[in-house]
Amino acid sequence: MKIGKLKLIFLTFLTSIISFSGIAVGNEPLPWQMGLQPPAGSISVMANDLHNLLLVVITAISVFVLFLLVYVCIRFRADKNPNPSKRTHNSILEVLWTVIPVLILVVIAVPSFRLLYYLDKQIEPDMTVKVTGIQWYWNYEYPDENIAFDSYMISDEDLKPGQKRLLDVDNPLILPENSKVKVLIAGNDVMHSFFVPSLAVQEYSVPGRLNEVWMDIPKGEKTYYGQCNQICGINHAYMPVVVKVLSKENYDNWLKKAKVEFANLNLLSQENIVLAEVKN
Image (cartoon, rainbow, N blue to C red; front, side):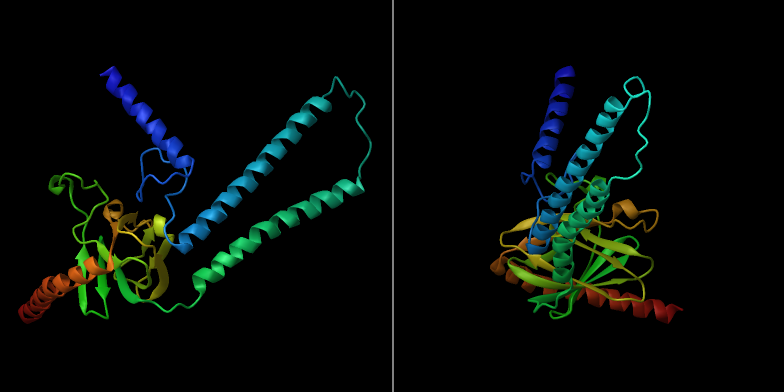
């Protein structure tokens, strides 16, 4: 039993070290993870680079301030300076503590504004997807293909081997690799948040409003995991996002099947709505 616990602690520690070091360990949240999930796509790479820059800057500032505090406590302690200095101004020091922070802010602002403008630019999308947040699941619609389906989290009792608890869903959002996707995000009841860390996508779904973001899907078949990170009600923790990226060929095959499967589901849903209206 003790060996098993020690092994678990060691594996957890190893996972944390690997994650902190920036080595890609998966496109999902991990226990004791430190640092961001591995970036996927140009947006995520730029956001990750900005994060790493800010981490270096804030670490350097923190170490420098700590050094000054320690130096002042030792150099100007009472037993060493029974008669404190009467000086009130130091022109060089005042210029330095004004100019240096300005330069630091400029260094931060350049990549920050570059990323903001990159996110806001108009693209020529390869496809458009509409995402609707609903208490407590997601609805994905492909306007160009005339299909739509709901995506629910798989409950614990229905999990199959290999599926991830609190993350996997019955119907993930399927996208083709190496593509640019425009995402229209709407809300049906309360505010939700469509958040996929590895793709650096986070946008609110607001009732009565249509928000827009875009995703740069990299090459390679992968599955990316996210969650609603806007507290939206009692089942907020059970509203995961799964984006499954397929090759062009596999995506086309899935699309053919989806047009049949989800067309029937949509038709059944419309019939239920009509029956409900008739009963009322």
